[in-house]
Amino acid sequence: MAKSKRKTKNRKLLKIVSGVTFVLLLVIYFLFFSSMSKTGDKQYLLIDENDNIDSVYKKLEPLSTRHGLWTFKQLAKFTSYGDHVRTGRYLIGSSGALQTFRHLRNGSQAPVSLTLQSVRTKEDLAKNVCAKLMFTKGEFLDSLNSSDFCKKYGYTPNTVVAMFIPNTYELYWNTTVGMFLEKMQEENKKFWSFERTQKANVIGFSKEEVMTLASIVDEETDNEGEMPKIAGMYINRLRADMPLQADPTVKFALQKFEAHRIYHKWLSYDSPYNTYKYHGLPPGPIRIPSVAAIDAVLNFVHHDYLYMCAKEDFSGTHNFAKTYQEHLDNARKYAKALTERGIE
Image 1 (cartoon, rainbow, N blue to C red):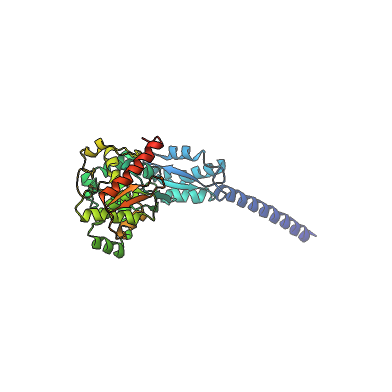
Image 2: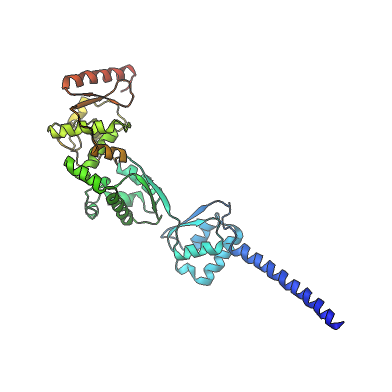
């Protein structure tokens, strides 16, 4: 009888221990492994050079669940994380406080997807890049406008935009300007394959000259099918030792990008980018050219055209001409169409 009572008592005790263990495991799971994100969606914590443990807590508060933040704080105190705060962009998502804490402590960042676009100016480029990375527009522009800094990568402030190839890149948010430019130089080298380099050599252009002409082609049209024909016309002009007389270069020199007409008084504006005043290519690209425009230059269409003018139907394409008189006729038709539409 006593033995039976002991067995019953042991079973009850085992049930109690099992129950307590189960509850304890649930608590541990809840505190350490349940989603830390307050919304349940992916959110990102940005830690910069000025942050300390208190500011990290403050930034975590609106992103994290209450229990997740409490657990994170206990882990931080236990491991002296406050003495080793690392900059970066960290995912606060379905992972629990333990995994999130390990990522922050080890500097295991969530990468940033940066889509580098074909843009007109360094300021536009800086806006595009610095919206995704930690360094400021001022830091970036200072570097791009520094002769010494650009020289490290084989460029000048005029040609440095030729380094950038439009594409989508994965980077870390706390990438420095120097690290970013090294990455862009590496990607540039990958882009300039043996085949592309050979095509540039056949034309007699350096890579920077290809990029410069491509930037003009890009400004002339959005029609990718017409780009090789436009490139061929400009190459004909260069080979004939004629001035390029490219309207987009005048717009760039004057920073009048939205102009529909090029006025005669603008043509004498003294700038090395004004290809009405100076022969040859301008000192550097007038925008970051698209890949389509770069390949259009490398695969330009061979023809005899020396002139072109936007079509009067505003289709975004051009009338091409072999003679100056034919070009003047095309120009008059386009000017008339502008006037009729009241476009200045």
